[in-house]
Image (cartoon, rainbow, N blue to C red; front, side, top):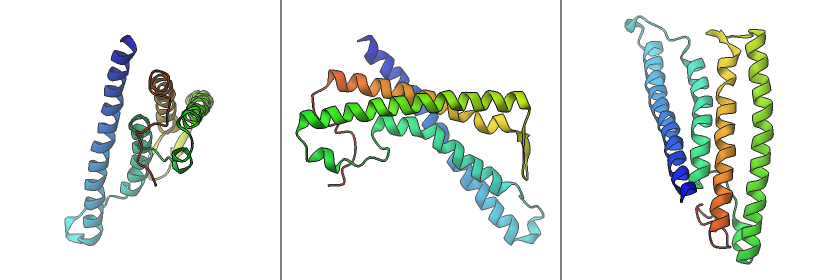
Length: 175
């Protein structure tokens, strides 16, 4: 019961981050529209030279904000054609294998992303494009997202452990 309550709370955290991604996408749309207008209507009198760069960073951030939420909902990239043709018990074991691999990979990348973040912070490296800012700002979302993904893999494995011994049904099938 405690794990279910924790899982619901965690799902709320992921929904919050996904909502931030949606808001960011909306503001990127407004920024791109303003940029197009400023380039095509000289009477407006301003140029948004930094708009493309901010849009690139926005897409990057949206990816990291939404990935754990998509994993939780089973809307990540998933090819389940093979699983659908296997006996339910074997498909269940492959689901476990995929989650264990996802947990291990997320943990390893989390560790290395933290090392890169600390290194960028200590070195005071800067990103020089249209905008200039500390490099660690760009690296900070990576370990946060990977920590969230790692935690979600633990919850996925818990749901597998207490559920029926069959393939997950939380993804859209290609079949």
